[in-house]
Length: 254
Image 1 (cartoon, rainbow, N blue to C red):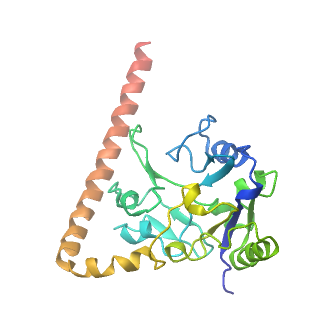
Image 2 (cartoon, rainbow, N blue to C red; image 1 turned 180 degrees about the vertical axis):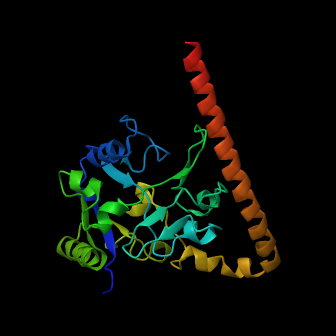
């Protein structure tokens, strides 16, 4: 049976800026509870105040994500359920995903001994088990709704048809080739800080021509990255071992 893609619908007219979604996300990941002004390694979603409007910022889980297309080891992938997930055990730390994402979503743990890329995974384990995302569950006003992607598109269109105060466009329905996070608003999206792409084509498709011109570089680069992966993993193991040994030594002296 075909897996139905899931999505989030965020209605900016309903958001009251309570930050329940932001705090719930931090809670389930064990992050500090202080509000964050921008996305970072300990804030996968934030509330951005734009005048009297409150706008959620988060990974939009593109249908054809640029971050996944540039990852040389498939550490980032698009799942059949909709979320774009990151597998840290595969990551070599090249950070190409950070460069490729037009919304600058993936973040790096610069302060960690063994750093990894961090991003929203749309509560993938919950979604895979038939549950809704934590942020949707925490929202007290229905500003964030979780459900089947196709059904949420229909719901968004129904709201726009019923109320002409809405901007007559569902952001995420076409942007970047379509996403799994939709926004509707009564204020033009460009005034709320949304990126308005000139092309609706998925970003990986726009880079195919350039990538096709450098097959030799790609082949050599792949070999080098494979070597770098081994070196990176080995260095990570050595650093962790040294840190553990140092901690045990300090404990014995005390």
